[in-house]
Length: 101
Image (cartoon, rainbow, N blue to C red; front, side, top):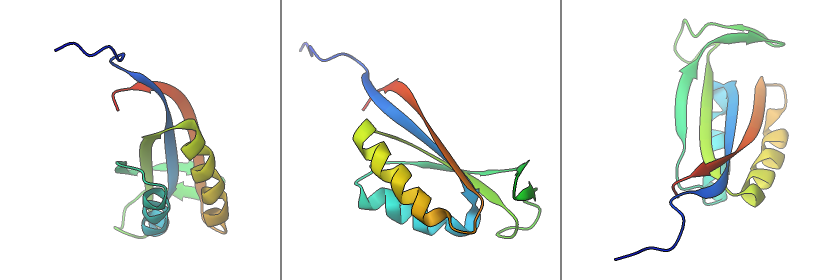
């Protein structure tokens, strides 16, 4: 059985680095835009909001959330993240990628 579609398709990888306290709100935002999957990792670092060492679970800790979506969905998610940002440390960026979808 031959499939004429290419093995990979253009997509956008969104990476979000933020405080753990925003995890549930961001997951809800992703799911509200029918994101089919995402990955969350505990991360450490330092930025304009200070050092985040992750030494006490749930306190002063950061997470990194990654998901692959269409360009249109990435626009909507990034706009939604701007509203969530508020007084919390949050940075988000995107890359054009090719992915198995």
